[in-house]
Amino acid sequence: MLAREWHARVSDCLDGGAPPREIDLLALASLLLAVEYGAQFTLVAERQIETNLSLPVPRRAAAWIDQLPWSSARAAKSEASHRHRAIGYLIANLNHGNSVLRIWTMEVPWICRA
Image (cartoon, rainbow, N blue to C red; front, side):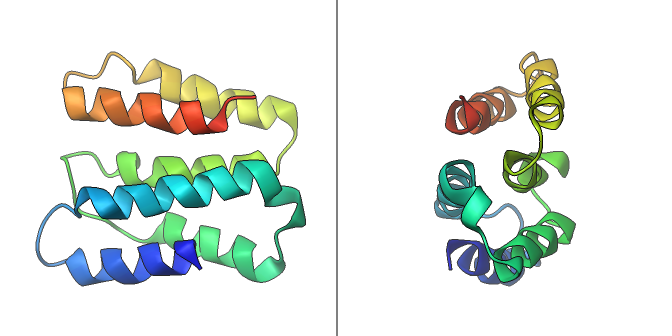
């Protein structure tokens, strides 16, 4: 439900610039559920993650930033080595020149922590 709500709200923002923080919180809440209960997700939930991952979202001069929670949610069901690669990608971006992006790249792995 949260993932669908994120998709709908982001789709409404495609013409008007960066989505508001409330949409980011929907993504983080979805990620938390994926980390905690991803093994029990249905095929419908997995498809929604893929749909959200493929949605082009204009924001903050970095398209990858909106894909982080969804790629991390997908990785939550994966084997440990795949999860470590996803976290490695986040860590590599902790020195990004934009402080907003650094904060976001800290929030996502905090949700994903073991």
